[in-house]
Length: 151
Image 1: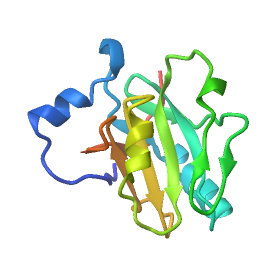
Image 2: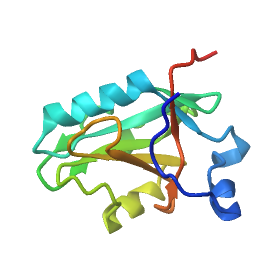
Image 3: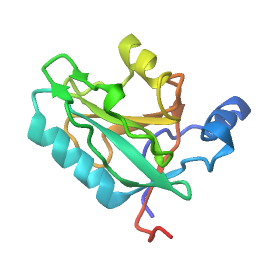
Image 4: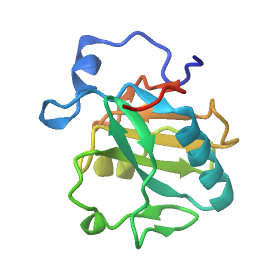
């Protein structure tokens, strides 16, 4: 298994924050095929930002749903949260930063606090190493890649 993302030791506070809302299973992995799809979508939309949602089961992100009405532009991707279905398997969001800097902006942090427990930002060159996962406060968290089947 190849692991990317935040490489430091997790503090007790970060470990607590990795817990999904309402006592759910913490999200700790992402299917490699989903990460490849994310990178392909980001490359396809370059030089615009791009956005999607993350669906997880048993702590593994396994699907990339898209909300209708999402608008992409050079400086942002606008997501209509009122279009989000009531679906407790949706655990967060993903979006691209065409600049290549995948640190969250103030607007990103504000959005993270409104929805989900894990958020991923990807940047150029949009490969399997150019991304970082964050919690709802915009703090880096570890999410590893996997090829495991989801049960």
